[in-house]
Length: 433
Image (spheres, rainbow, N blue to C red):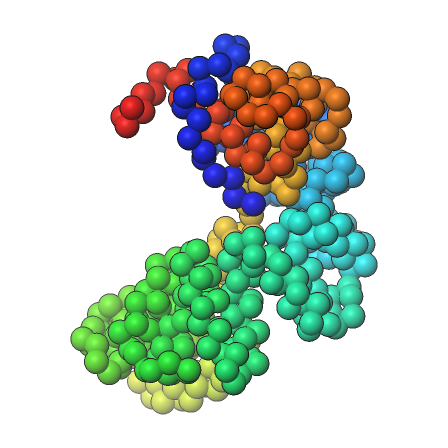
């Protein structure tokens, strides 16, 4: 659940005057400054003492390679430590690595068991991944109904990927249900999911369940293309080159085709090759064109491969032996560039940054009770007497009912209190007051 910043400016005067805990905040400051090692050094002591929040955060640092080489073995150790204490985010991350055999022997059943625990605890990303498992029969029997149920639960928490999946299921069901797909796609696209924006573009371009609207298609393609989605870059390029009702812009189309080509989209590679061969929106270059056709021919998309083969045959008479050798050398050089470009986007999608969204309000409450100086114990996800007493003291200080209850509402107030107090200590003045 996303924690809202609830106005508590009037209540903050009663907060304890002790400074914010330095280790946690120093780690964040280091990470935001690009010093991952500084963050690890600030967090490692509490992590070794059982702080599940920081165990998970350090695991992310190792898995992401921010500390140097990607170290999945060490990341697994930290995730296991946090997962053993029931941290849903760690269980979900651990499940993903175990299912894929990353740093450990693949074990789909164990991965599913971990996902189930985190999903039943109400953690949206786990619910989403469990839905994928049921839809694809990965570690569990194929069960479309259970897949839809878990997608819906994750979507109800605002997870864009799950919202998009609900739209995809509705679209595949056809009939009157397809109308619901638009609402799901739009919600996911508005939340920033590029794939959903691209699918909305396709729906408008093809007029599936809505009136055909090329301008709307271009708008949604643009949103996805700006986020680096290669298929959307190619789709938008085609509209700008051929689209009815739009101003034709072959130069912009060629730029988009090139982006899509480097993004690994096979049709983008074919379209960019055509633009190069014919000088459409770009200076003609038969050698570069042939190189991209060679790449598309050996790609995984059979349809694009067949088209690339046909165009390559047509282009061959324009190339002498030296030019063909140059094209082969260029294609060889392009392949790792394309792979690296694709990997960068995939890694950016896969790797979250350390965050308080851990699937446990107890962990989040403990973290901010420590930050504000109310709790001296470990962030262990256990609402013991010390945690309840700390929560009660905070509630009393800010004028909330002193019941020691730990829930998302309390976390919202704690997050806001820590944010406001941090700003005061740094001398930041709210211009609205």
